[in-house]
Image (cartoon, rainbow, N blue to C red; front, side, top):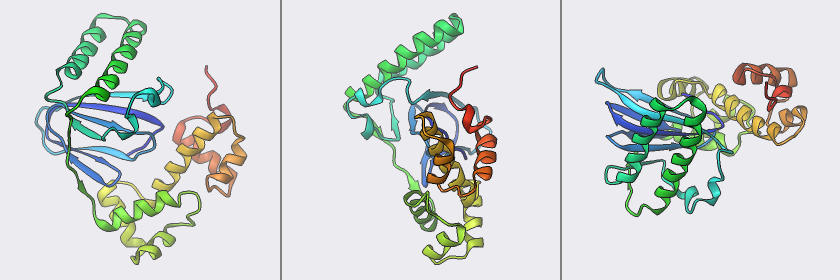
Length: 238
């Protein structure tokens, strides 16, 4: 279970698996396309030892202007593209060029192909949206509350009190369903938001306070551990 400030695109080919995005659980089938937006907690749950195959592509948010694509913000998280031959051919082309070209040339071609894919999806009239199940009601309510009050939550006790459960029960629920803890979920999301603000040029000290970190030293250590670089080094290319 993890989150990042990237768009992630998964094209599922075969296997027995579920994909969980926040509190939504999708059972995957051949030619499902999964679009994971930045800062969304997610993970793949493999159900058997059967052969498993997927494409997995990470896209930086400035890869291209997503907003210029008609209806992009309304794209479903998971659709099935069994009937969309153009989209399937695009992934076949990615395979072909990845085997034939050097990394630099492949990246140039991949950008064009992925742009075509998103434009194709914006004109595709009949994607089959995948049904999903939700995790336990308590967990769904907890995630909703946490995301709506991300920068002001005082701790796990506050969430537990709001939902009329014990902190220990909430902790067990997060570990069982999401393989993380409430504290880590909050901290990771705060750090992702902080990174975006720092990349926009805001002072890290100010950002730490605005994102709910009262202790800059704790923020600095958490940031370094999560991203592998300090806040002041963010955006600096080697």
